[in-house]
Image (cartoon, rainbow, N blue to C red; front, side, top):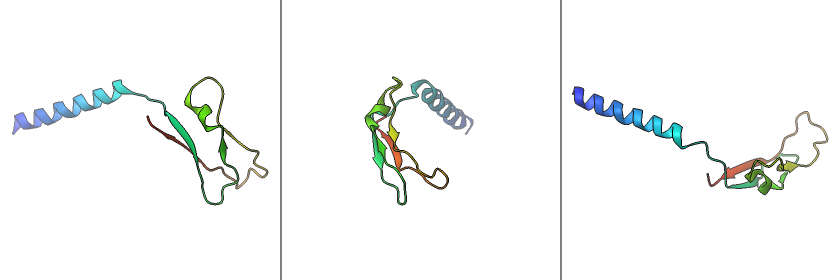
Length: 77
């Protein structure tokens, strides 16, 4: 029983160490996902794929209180 518990603990430790070494990854594809009642859609979503100070954006929110954008979805990590 003790050997089984040590084996399980060792596997869990190895998994957590492996997870910390592998990331973080950036999304490879970005898109706009419509959200009911949203005020603006994301445009230039491909600009979010790299960290070059060129950004995905959305139009002007005419009344910022109570307005929101669609979702910006990141996939292909």
